[in-house]
Image (cartoon, rainbow, N blue to C red; front, side, top):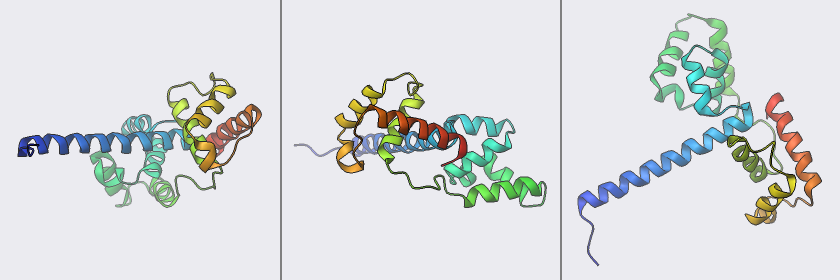
Length: 167
């Protein structure tokens, strides 16, 4: 078996980096969707248009945005000069606030809900189908047993309420 050339190693390394960046973005997109009902890829453009609530919600989900994105970094720096104390207070509150404040009994189910919600399928898919996916992925073993379709319906209602009122 031949050793890989430096060029081939570089291509593989870049592919791995891009894959991990995709996974990272996918995960935070769905956490944002779960917590705020909007993906991070929706919140950031809204923040760029001046939506202060979207700005705060985005940094609550991923605080790295404050240092990694020029608009967020510059806005935060301006706020620290006393430009808009009320907005700075809001930003600080969201920085200190965890994305998820409550205990989630079925985290894998809620992430499944977020993924389905991302495709805009959550409200249309039948509880039986969600239960089949949940069981088919082996999630009932490690994440807690869900007996039937009624439990899925109740958890979906709970999920929507938490989206509106906060996790």
